[in-house]
Length: 170
Image 1 (tube, rainbow, N blue to C red):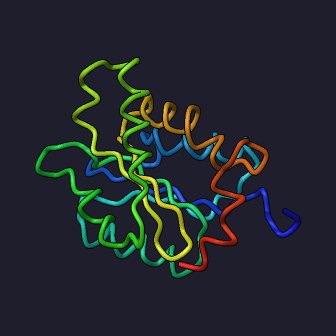
Image 2: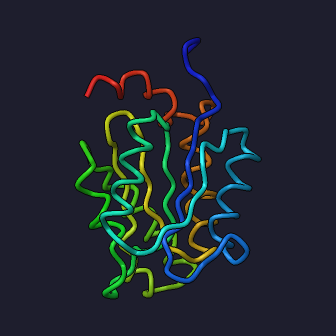
Image 3: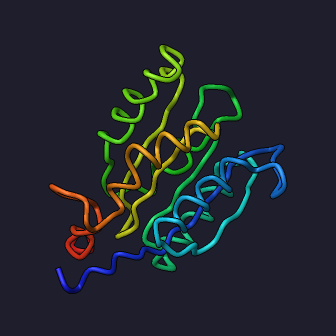
């Protein structure tokens, strides 16, 4: 495991037609948590709910070899919620367990309302992409109960970081 860098380059994208840097609590929560965990913030941005803008931004991050992309917002079922539709075409491989686990954990907090979440994750080239709901609580659940451990090389029995060198083989 000597070739594994425990500090990852992570980009944060908030998807919203109304949030600004001052009002983006979910994006700030993710930035605070990832930097506290020792990771590097590659970039943080806010984009409107437009599937082509979202897809282009994330594709650029993948091309720039950002290792992880965290997207908050746009995962619901209303007409403006386009994040999964925008991002899933970029996936070489989907990680279905992420959405399933997120909804299971969310059930303890918001009960059956978790069924309205289309949280997804996947792999694009060698970049891990996680699409999270836009609420601060959902971002805390995803980071604290799933991502923090999976993006920590010391977490056992396994984690995403230790398989990253092999991810490039896809």
